[in-house]
Amino acid sequence: MRGQLPKVILRRIGASVGVLWVVSVLLFTATYVLPGDPATRILGNRATPETVTALREEMGLNRPYPEQYFSWLTGFVTGDAGTTVAGNDVWPILRERGSNSLILAAVASLLVIAIAMALGVSSGMRAGRRTDHALTVGALMGVSVPDFVLAGVLIAVFGLALEWLPPVSLVTAGMMPLDRPEILLLPSVSLAVPAGAWASRYVRAAVVNARTAPNVEAARLAGLSPARVFVRHLLPGVLGSISQVIAAATVFLVGGAVVAEQVFSYPGLGSLLASAVKVKDVSIVLATGLLMAAVVIAVFTFADLIGLLVNPRLRRTP
Image 1: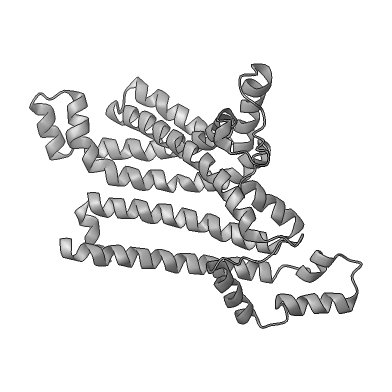
Image 2 (image 1 turned 45 degrees about the horizontal axis):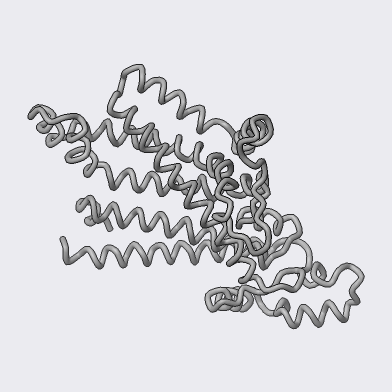
């Protein structure tokens, strides 16, 4: 099986690249059929027809759809994602906003792992008991609360009433979010609670199933402590499943970032995408959407590869 592992890994990576290409086609098609002329949006309604026609020619908007798509995709891959409606290059904006979102996502991901493991393992190891029921109710509440409601409650309680943390997460020019780590706490919590609560239910299911495995039962009958049984025998059997579930929770982070970054005034990719959609800035929408999709696909692929390494049976799947 070891000889087949590199082939399986390359196959999974190739499939991920194919999925990303399909996403790029769907994104470009969606913006292509939108009403309105990008050249007119850039120049304004007072521009003369001759000026609009000249800009359309310069932007390649008169070319056929396939030619426009491949021109945009080639430019994106080579570092030219176009210009905004204000005439600014897209990539410098993406780098700045992307680094901010990456920091926020890293903090939120750590919280997701902590919440999912704490709730899921505690609930799974005490399945059927009062602790399990209480944690299940708590997880369902965490999943059910809308993102904007949770963000508003956090701002009202910790930002305004108690004044423990800043209610908005402003990042000024030349400043990195880690220069003021306190601005990351509220948006990170608002992102991590629903994602961690959702993932905890699958972690619980994996733990409950693994508890009945023969090696776990044998270790328990041998008199090993619950901690040693969990670390040495139970955890290795569920690590692949848990990593994939936690990776799936990144979908919550990507979707929730659009809401959280706007509520907390955090300058990341989510707020950039939302503002670009409002003004129909196609270049920003395309670049941001494809970049966020690439992050999600990359995380899923990484988790899938971890599952392959941990669970050899998965390598037999086509």
